[in-house]
Image 1: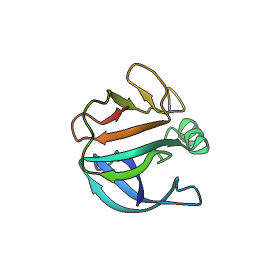
Image 2: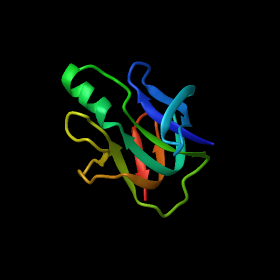
Image 3: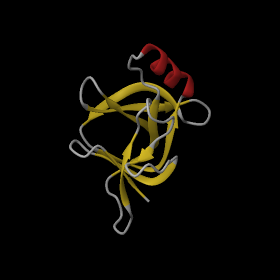
Image 4: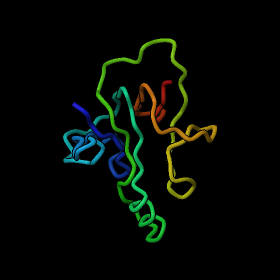
Length: 119
């Protein structure tokens, strides 16, 4: 089952929602909250209209998330890079070194280190 994961800034954990829509990238109902999980075949989505509302109102709104399949582990040998998103800096997900990223093999969502992209 494809799910959507985003940082819940109020709770401090990761919200998991059912993927909805024709292409499976729309946000459905929240089904769980976890402190850590791993997704495979991950696509990063930023809804530009939601980002523009955040920029104009300076108010939080869920408008960016990762879509993928929940798995148990990340295979060894992949390159790990910290993943970040800040609507005030850029309209897409980036690695800490500033490289834009739209898709990756795995994303590990952790309690202490945030999101880590594995390519």
